[in-house]
Picture 1: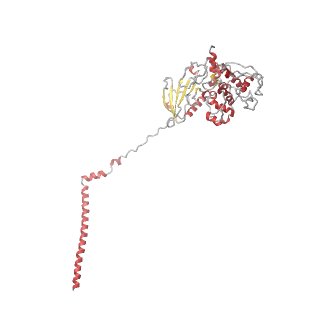
Picture 2: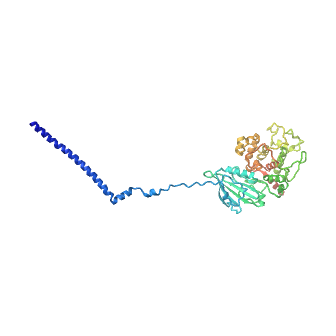
Picture 3: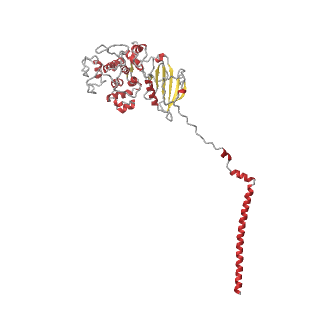
Length: 466
């Protein structure tokens, strides 16, 4: 009985505990349920409030962004460089003036000197300065323009050319602009007949007066050019076969009577104001005779620079030029002066002069340049000649002649090669020389600013004796 009562008490004590725990769980669940309901009610209530729309609009995407997209910056198209500038050239632009192919015309106007008859065209090219200069020198020569003056070896001055009373000046800038572009200008104008007949040589863009009368000695800073006196016009009247670029050189020397020829072997020398058969190949004999005569005529008043003619008692330097040869005095005189290779100078073992053989370009320069420099020729090699002159065939030049060719380059615009052959990248050293070309080489003796020309000699002879 007692056990039953204890058991009942225990059971009564456990029952209330379980009930308490159950009540707590139910209360917690009920609280969570009411909290969820409260939140739901709050959200629902906010959905219909004015603030809800403001909140919604603040976080919503801008409808304009979807309707009209933002413009994407587009780079402007690159302006293509014009390869044809015909449309920009003046309507009356002379078609005979060559145009550099890789250049853009950037301005058309009057030149800086303000001469209304002139037109100036300013160009720009991505090519270097020397390419532009070489192009115009080549084209002017190929199209039979008369080149009045050229830029110096340092690139100073302008390239001036004339043809059919049209005068063109190509002015080049010595340096390229930032970015590698080259600017150059072309001035052109129609000349009067009196200006065209007397081109002046100084490297200037302006047209000098044709009536200027220089002194016999070459003034410093100018390049002498052939005279245009009335007497020299006979050359075009008597023989129009002389190339235009060489006519005045031949005329001046003919007036000095330095170009004497024989109509046939053994005949006496003929003197005249013209050169017979100017395009005929000149012989070694003829050039030796002219070389002595031209030098001595031009330096008529300076005995120290004259070549002494050999006397009959001299031992012949060449086996084929005996004392009885009509040109013995001149040829022997050149050999004794050491101006041409001979057995006397020890520069050659060939004892023959070959007087009637054609004169080659390299031989002409070898004989002439020592009378310009009046000193020992410099040493030279193929690379040196190629670097200075740009000759593609420099390796074909005789080793002795290459020294004279290199020294001739240092004479700038007065170089014999430039005066006789114009601009060229092929020297053709073995090519025969014409009479007119030979005469052109003898027109000037000396180095820059220290020489004399046939023009100077003619003016000196025309002055009255004091």
